[in-house]
Length: 429
Image 1: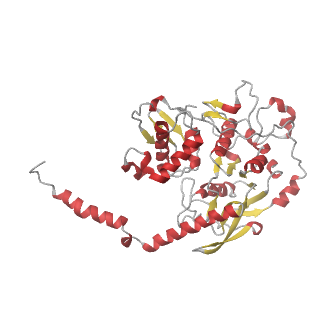
Image 2: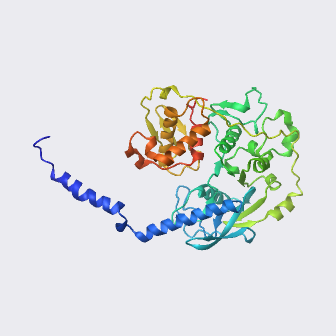
Image 3: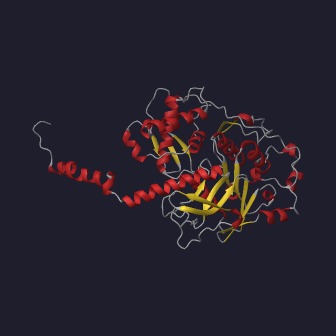
């Protein structure tokens, strides 16, 4: 207002404090230049490993000396005095990196890999490291050179999730209620149907690698033993277990699997590579395990259904909530989900979301898709591709109402965008 004095404190903040903050935070000469250089060099080395594993037909690489165990179940810090990883000689590969130079470690080949061992010996710890190996780690994490195929998806059972028009017929058929499993709907999936849907949706999202832990899987989805096959005839069982499909998924669809198993030996028969963890140290035991498994023949699945590639041609209509571009309140609940007005999108079992800022972006992507892309014609794949291209071209601010929101944004992978849309109960297919 004319004639009003500007407070001295505001002048000091605007012309002394704020410029100094900007200078110290954003200007290169004021930063730790050596640390910036090391961070860039590490990222460039990590990218070379990502390119190398594709060239060498590997699913993942775990460098010797990596510290895989974490400080605790809720910490991302490396465990003090953790056992350094050491590759079995049979699986050791060497790579030449532009900055670090030669590096050796375990190369996990594409195909079907089984990780076995006693309880608390490091099976799930290795799988968890591979799970977050889709991202680059910062220096000091201990897993800087643990690199997985960046399309890898962690799969699990997810009781209670909704499924929208997903073709789960490669696993589920002939349901007693006559439901169509080629376009399956439910608001409350069982363990087996949810895991079947998660597999098919991961294929739709372009995954080349599945990561599966027996502990978080539906038993009847993973395996069906000989006695059960004798008691319950094939024609009375609607579920084709994953063990009957995993080989076809690799040979026909090019999708590898890394599976942690601690109780069922059936996967010994179909695995290409078998790793035993003992006190956090891996051993390659493929030949030994195959020899022992020969005494326990895998039962032949009588009347096994032929695998058909699932249909992914799903198109979404606009939800009425968004029809008039009305106000939609979006609130991220950490990494566990998104509140959109009165609806919650549950994401707690989408285990490769690593930052709440990614969840923020996912919420705005759902809103953007509803307001701009869902038209009953574009497939979900086309919608996700369009949103990815927009963010790459115009930045994360392009999907938000205002640029200040992007301070709390982080880029999610394509696979998590698909996972979010597939768990959105308001999706109209």
